[in-house]
Length: 202
Image 1 (cartoon, rainbow, N blue to C red):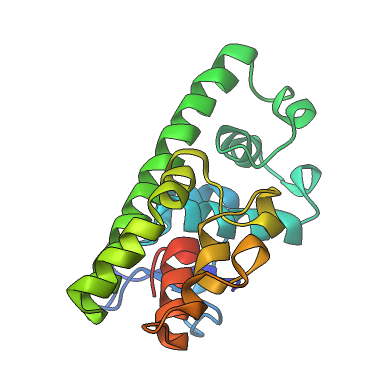
Image 2 (cartoon, one colour):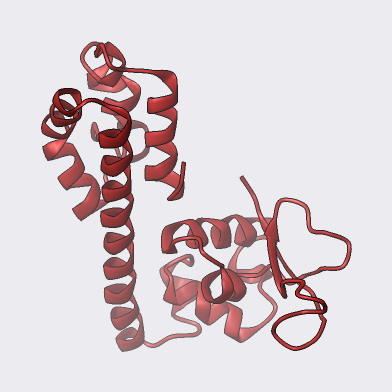
Protein backbone atom coordinates (compact mmCIF):
# COMPACT_ATOMS: atom_id res chain seq x y z
CA UNK A 1 0.00 0.00 0.00
CA UNK A 2 1.35 3.39 -1.01
CA UNK A 3 0.24 6.36 1.07
CA UNK A 4 0.67 10.10 0.70
CA UNK A 5 1.15 12.82 3.29
CA UNK A 6 -0.96 15.93 2.84
CA UNK A 7 -0.89 19.25 4.66
CA UNK A 8 -3.88 21.53 5.19
CA UNK A 9 -2.72 25.14 5.34
CA UNK A 10 -5.28 26.45 7.77
CA UNK A 11 -5.09 28.12 11.16
CA UNK A 12 -1.78 27.18 12.76
CA UNK A 13 -1.42 23.63 13.97
CA UNK A 14 -5.14 22.90 14.40
CA UNK A 15 -6.39 23.81 10.94
CA UNK A 16 -9.60 25.71 10.40
CA UNK A 17 -12.63 24.64 12.45
CA UNK A 18 -10.71 21.71 13.86
CA UNK A 19 -9.65 20.26 10.49
CA UNK A 20 -6.41 18.29 11.01
CA UNK A 21 -3.29 19.84 9.53
CA UNK A 22 -1.84 16.52 8.38
CA UNK A 23 -3.65 13.83 6.42
CA UNK A 24 -2.20 10.45 5.48
CA UNK A 25 -4.17 8.56 2.85
CA UNK A 26 -3.91 6.76 -0.48
CA UNK A 27 -5.84 9.67 -2.03
CA UNK A 28 -5.64 13.07 -0.34
CA UNK A 29 -8.69 15.28 0.08
CA UNK A 30 -8.79 18.23 -2.29
CA UNK A 31 -7.86 20.79 0.40
CA UNK A 32 -4.58 19.05 1.24
CA UNK A 33 -1.29 19.78 -0.49
CA UNK A 34 0.85 16.70 -1.14
CA UNK A 35 4.02 17.02 0.96
CA UNK A 36 5.10 13.39 0.62
CA UNK A 37 8.86 12.93 0.79
CA UNK A 38 11.44 10.92 2.72
CA UNK A 39 11.93 13.58 5.38
CA UNK A 40 8.23 14.01 6.09
CA UNK A 41 7.63 10.27 6.31
CA UNK A 42 10.39 9.87 8.87
CA UNK A 43 9.51 13.02 10.82
CA UNK A 44 5.75 13.51 10.43
CA UNK A 45 4.47 10.01 9.72
CA UNK A 46 1.62 10.14 12.19
CA UNK A 47 0.83 7.19 14.43
CA UNK A 48 2.48 4.65 12.11
CA UNK A 49 5.46 2.82 13.54
CA UNK A 50 9.07 3.29 12.50
CA UNK A 51 9.31 0.40 10.03
CA UNK A 52 6.02 1.29 8.34
CA UNK A 53 7.15 4.90 7.88
CA UNK A 54 10.50 3.71 6.55
CA UNK A 55 8.75 1.39 4.07
CA UNK A 56 6.58 4.27 2.84
CA UNK A 57 9.70 6.44 2.50
CA UNK A 58 11.27 3.64 0.45
CA UNK A 59 8.22 3.50 -1.84
CA UNK A 60 8.42 7.26 -2.32
CA UNK A 61 12.14 7.03 -3.03
CA UNK A 62 11.51 4.49 -5.79
CA UNK A 63 8.81 6.74 -7.26
CA UNK A 64 11.26 9.62 -7.76
CA UNK A 65 13.97 7.47 -9.31
CA UNK A 66 16.06 6.71 -6.25
CA UNK A 67 18.65 8.75 -4.38
CA UNK A 68 19.58 10.82 -7.43
CA UNK A 69 15.94 11.87 -7.77
CA UNK A 70 15.93 13.60 -4.39
CA UNK A 71 16.04 17.36 -4.84
CA UNK A 72 17.35 18.57 -1.49
CA UNK A 73 20.38 17.77 0.62
CA UNK A 74 18.14 17.35 3.69
CA UNK A 75 16.22 14.63 1.85
CA UNK A 76 19.44 12.87 0.91
CA UNK A 77 20.71 13.02 4.48
CA UNK A 78 17.40 11.65 5.79
CA UNK A 79 17.46 8.78 3.29
CA UNK A 80 21.04 8.04 4.32
CA UNK A 81 20.34 8.19 8.07
CA UNK A 82 17.64 5.58 7.72
CA UNK A 83 19.66 3.36 5.37
CA UNK A 84 17.45 3.86 2.34
CA UNK A 85 20.52 4.68 0.26
CA UNK A 86 23.51 2.68 -0.93
CA UNK A 87 26.94 3.25 0.64
CA UNK A 88 28.27 5.22 -2.33
CA UNK A 89 25.30 7.58 -2.10
CA UNK A 90 25.51 7.90 1.68
CA UNK A 91 29.17 8.84 1.33
CA UNK A 92 28.19 11.95 -0.63
CA UNK A 93 26.27 13.47 2.31
CA UNK A 94 27.56 11.79 5.49
CA UNK A 95 30.99 10.95 6.84
CA UNK A 96 31.83 7.47 8.16
CA UNK A 97 31.32 8.37 11.83
CA UNK A 98 27.85 9.81 11.17
CA UNK A 99 26.89 6.72 9.18
CA UNK A 100 28.03 4.43 11.99
CA UNK A 101 25.99 6.36 14.57
CA UNK A 102 22.97 6.32 12.27
CA UNK A 103 23.36 2.55 11.83
CA UNK A 104 23.13 2.07 15.59
CA UNK A 105 19.98 4.18 15.73
CA UNK A 106 18.46 2.35 12.76
CA UNK A 107 19.10 -1.07 14.31
CA UNK A 108 17.73 0.01 17.70
CA UNK A 109 14.55 1.54 16.25
CA UNK A 110 13.96 -1.42 13.94
CA UNK A 111 14.31 -3.95 16.76
CA UNK A 112 12.07 -1.92 19.09
CA UNK A 113 9.42 -1.83 16.37
CA UNK A 114 9.60 -5.58 15.76
CA UNK A 115 9.42 -6.21 19.53
CA UNK A 116 6.23 -4.14 19.71
CA UNK A 117 4.73 -5.76 16.62
CA UNK A 118 5.27 -9.26 18.01
CA UNK A 119 3.85 -8.22 21.38
CA UNK A 120 0.74 -6.87 19.63
CA UNK A 121 0.47 -10.03 17.52
CA UNK A 122 0.64 -12.22 20.64
CA UNK A 123 -1.94 -10.06 22.40
CA UNK A 124 -4.27 -10.39 19.44
CA UNK A 125 -3.80 -14.18 19.25
CA UNK A 126 -4.37 -14.61 22.98
CA UNK A 127 -7.57 -12.57 22.69
CA UNK A 128 -9.14 -14.58 19.88
CA UNK A 129 -7.87 -18.05 20.87
CA UNK A 130 -8.57 -20.10 23.97
CA UNK A 131 -5.71 -20.33 26.50
CA UNK A 132 -4.53 -23.79 25.39
CA UNK A 133 -4.33 -22.86 21.69
CA UNK A 134 -2.79 -19.49 22.50
CA UNK A 135 -0.06 -21.19 24.55
CA UNK A 136 0.64 -23.67 21.77
CA UNK A 137 0.98 -20.87 19.21
CA UNK A 138 3.38 -18.98 21.49
CA UNK A 139 5.40 -22.13 22.23
CA UNK A 140 5.69 -23.23 18.60
CA UNK A 141 6.82 -19.79 17.47
CA UNK A 142 9.26 -19.13 20.32
CA UNK A 143 12.48 -19.52 18.30
CA UNK A 144 11.00 -17.98 15.15
CA UNK A 145 9.72 -14.93 16.99
CA UNK A 146 13.13 -14.47 18.64
CA UNK A 147 14.79 -14.44 15.21
CA UNK A 148 12.14 -12.05 13.92
CA UNK A 149 12.61 -9.61 16.81
CA UNK A 150 16.39 -9.74 17.00
CA UNK A 151 17.39 -10.08 13.35
CA UNK A 152 14.30 -9.18 11.33
CA UNK A 153 13.99 -12.64 9.76
CA UNK A 154 10.49 -12.84 8.30
CA UNK A 155 10.36 -15.53 5.63
CA UNK A 156 12.40 -17.68 3.29
CA UNK A 157 11.14 -15.69 0.31
CA UNK A 158 12.52 -12.45 1.79
CA UNK A 159 15.51 -13.59 3.83
CA UNK A 160 16.54 -16.98 2.45
CA UNK A 161 15.80 -18.55 5.85
CA UNK A 162 12.53 -19.98 7.10
CA UNK A 163 10.90 -17.42 9.35
CA UNK A 164 7.91 -16.49 11.45
CA UNK A 165 5.75 -15.57 8.45
CA UNK A 166 6.45 -18.97 6.89
CA UNK A 167 4.99 -20.66 9.98
CA UNK A 168 1.98 -18.35 10.09
CA UNK A 169 1.24 -18.76 6.37
CA UNK A 170 2.29 -22.40 6.06
CA UNK A 171 4.97 -21.76 3.46
CA UNK A 172 8.50 -23.03 2.78
CA UNK A 173 9.56 -25.54 5.46
CA UNK A 174 6.26 -25.11 7.31
CA UNK A 175 3.93 -26.09 4.46
CA UNK A 176 2.80 -29.18 6.37
CA UNK A 177 3.00 -28.10 10.00
CA UNK A 178 2.52 -24.33 10.18
CA UNK A 179 -0.46 -22.43 11.52
CA UNK A 180 -2.79 -23.49 8.65
CA UNK A 181 -2.40 -27.11 9.81
CA UNK A 182 -3.74 -26.30 13.29
CA UNK A 183 -7.35 -26.82 14.34
CA UNK A 184 -7.54 -23.21 15.54
CA UNK A 185 -6.42 -21.70 12.22
CA UNK A 186 -8.73 -19.26 10.48
CA UNK A 187 -7.94 -17.08 7.49
CA UNK A 188 -8.77 -14.03 9.59
CA UNK A 189 -6.29 -15.05 12.28
CA UNK A 190 -3.56 -15.66 9.69
CA UNK A 191 -4.22 -12.43 7.80
CA UNK A 192 -4.32 -10.28 10.93
CA UNK A 193 -1.11 -11.77 12.35
CA UNK A 194 0.68 -11.18 9.05
CA UNK A 195 -0.62 -7.60 8.86
CA UNK A 196 0.47 -6.78 12.42
CA UNK A 197 3.95 -8.21 11.80
CA UNK A 198 4.47 -6.54 8.42
CA UNK A 199 2.51 -3.28 8.74
CA UNK A 200 2.26 -2.71 12.48
CA UNK A 201 -1.53 -3.00 12.57
CA UNK A 202 -4.27 -5.48 11.62
